[in-house]
Image (tube, rainbow, N blue to C red; front, side, top):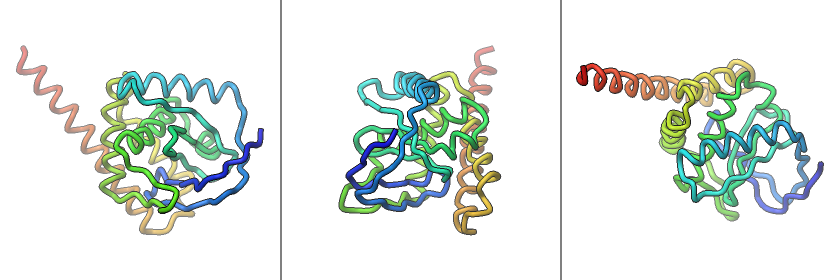
Length: 192
């Protein structure tokens, strides 16, 4: 199904933290009821755990580029390339949670300014995703797993600086998740 998107879209790179801009372009959207239903179900599960007053809408963009992004009207957009690359529903939940983190933390673009997320903004969205994934009953390690899968599938096309940034994000996520697990174990042991 083809719809006109008449606005500046920010293709905020999920895995590399930069954006490219498309203006007043026609994009092909996938009308795959099963994939959209899965995304809607995940969005609902994650939203209940994060901010029930925020509305998000699932959109699948017909692009081979491995990407996900959010726009200011609440759309969480993933590409067909990302859907083909990831291997589990948890990894899709991780991509969605990360993009929700950008929106809820007001890390977004305006129609007059292209947005390039800083490393700190990406990690803020990652931290939000870890928290929401945990609260929704997902293994928070799925965020690092998803980024690793994306890197290994499409990483050869990334510039060295982006590979370095992605690798750094994966390490930070693993450290954050590991410290949370240690804190829970310590608290459990103190309760014995």
